Length: 260
Figure (cartoon, rainbow, N blue to C red):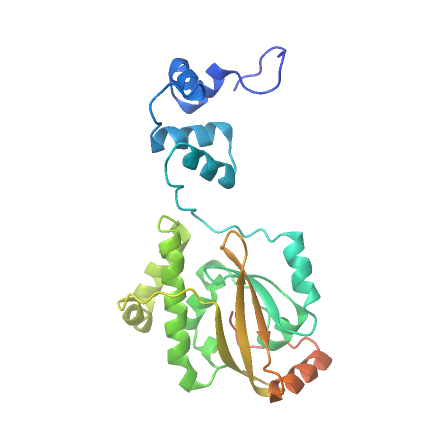
């Protein structure tokens, strides 16, 4: 809006909101006063842009108007300070924060030591799912007999993400790239299996502590597009002492890639 003179009260005037939203001031006034018909999705979308609403405010507006909130497109890669503090507090366990497209955003020292640095990649390779199906080095850290299970779990989880955000261009780009580049992925994708990955058990080959078997738990944030992933040993298992040794060794630099 062009700069104007002094205002008696802060904020936009009614006609200015209408102008920004591309509707008549009279129609907008009737909406404000509850006298008009139920606004359409396109009208609500225009108001969302005009008022610069947050995603939560947009969803609230849609529900107030009797519409289902639109799917949230695109994942938020900004990690909150509170979540980072929680990650740093897990000093004895490997843990990381990843998006629902399996892009690692942050990891603690134990995750560095177990998996190697996962945030250095660029482009589609930022996604551990993409690397699992396109980079043979990704699989070297896992026994061959576990590969089929891991592939299936990765595809199921990706389909669940795409179902939650069907208009998200990043999710669609990842799926289309994998279908074109990996026959294995395309075969699993054609099965239409879907499941959000919440827990599992993984066996990881480490160059110093050997083959370690860990429980893998995924804790979603309130928005569901970021996940705190924690690797933990079963009580009394050999993995307990293996992680203790890993903590003493500190961070290692690996030439092969790990995964989330």
